[in-house]
Amino acid sequence: MNRFLTILFLFISILSWSQITAEKTSYDFGEIYAEEETYVDFKFTNTTDKSHFLLTVDKPRDVFYIFSSKTIAPDSSMIIRFKIDANRKGKFQHEIDVYFSANQEPITIRLFGNVKEVSNNPLNDCPDFSSTPSKEYATGFQVTIKVIDSLTREPIKNAKVYLVERGELVGDHKTNNKGVVQKIIPLGWYYITANHEDYNENYYDGYLNFKRNVVIIELSQDPEEMIVEVEEETEEEEEEIVVVVEEEGEETQEEIIDIVNEPVEEEIVEEVEIVNDDPTPWEELPDTLFDEKHFKYSNITFILDVSTSMSGNGKLALLRMSMIELTKILRPNDIVSIIKYSSNTEVILKNTSGANKEEIITTVKELKASGLTAGGSAIKLGYKTNKKTHLDNGNNIVIMITDGAFNKGDKNYRETIKNTFAKKGTKFSVVGIKMSEYLTPHMQAIVADGGGAFVQIRTIEEAQKKLINEIKRTAFRSS
Image (cartoon, rainbow, N blue to C red; front, side, top):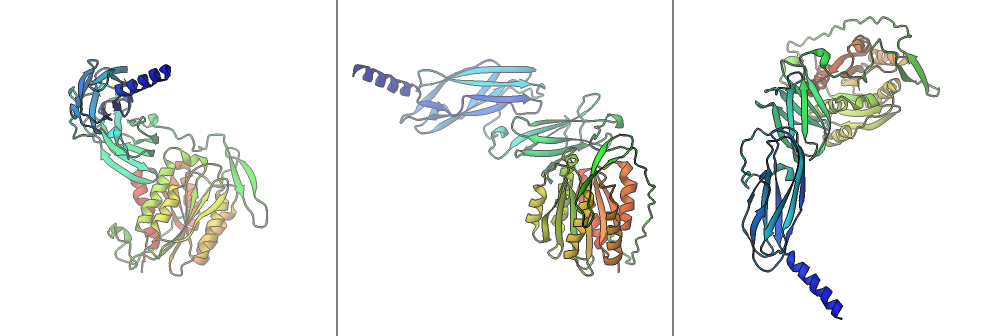
């Protein structure tokens, strides 16, 4: 019995020593760059039925603090904000002892991180409590984007920075005098581009979170220093591509084509004259105008390349953004179908009204890239799908969005494109996402057979308008 009473007494004593509790006792700042916030809040709660006091804070000289109040009422809390000195590079680990009147032992707080870039802020005081640390936001965090010269490492001011998340533009900014943009964003995968009139554009494509919250984009004035897109094919590279050939009544088979050894037929690109009897061409109309008076209703079938090569260099982000921007202006009588293709082809959206914008956008956002490229099969399925929703006197069009060549061994799709345009007036256009320039003549020859156009999209600005312009061009009532 005596042993039991002794244990019970010790247990009660321990409880009495911990009557002020901390919500957390450590914080990792991660890698710290200039312009980042270097402070964090800790909440302390009084679990007793009496008021208690903050006695003292034993801290290193590289740590500064403020507190919301010195007295903590029963069942209430107080905040202590700690700021670290980021004026010296290198890793740090600080231990801070916080003493309260209710506790016999201090509560030890640990702060650690790595200063990668010295802060330009000379102030040592903590920010006022009217400013809440953005790293503590429940719905987002602060990302720091720094744009620098690739050679001098100097910041570039007035650089244009775009942030795109799953195809939607979430930020459009210019860097300050220190070459920096800061913004609160939710967790996610981002495509971020930076450009300046004196430099070549560059980008970041990747996941961002509370710890991975600093992006440094280097801009170059020398084209040779720009990032090389290794996924794209060149005429000199001895690469093999897998081509899916689908003949009616026969099983699908794979054919290996050696680009170097394959004889290249000269493509004759014919200039297609666009007759426009209207004295006011569509280009001169207001950008926001997309009415029935000036533009026919459209029956659009998209054929989307989601093969592995589309997963890098922001290609999928530009594809998504192009389609989301178009979706925003679609009318209820416009019809959209979407086919995705890689190793296989699949209809993922069928006969959908332009009024169902959320459904279309959600479908586009959920696209993922993997597998090979079955372009020829996708074109045939695209025409079959478009035919089912054909609009008499409407703008019937099949649009392929891809980053490279498709099914060069199967010539049947060329006949499908040409014959359907001649008999039904169904147009065929290609949108090239960061496509190699040497493929341009080949693509122009294909779309000439289908009365469409080859549209190249390489930047966010082009993704915002070029697909919209192609639909407006093909839907314009010229008479």
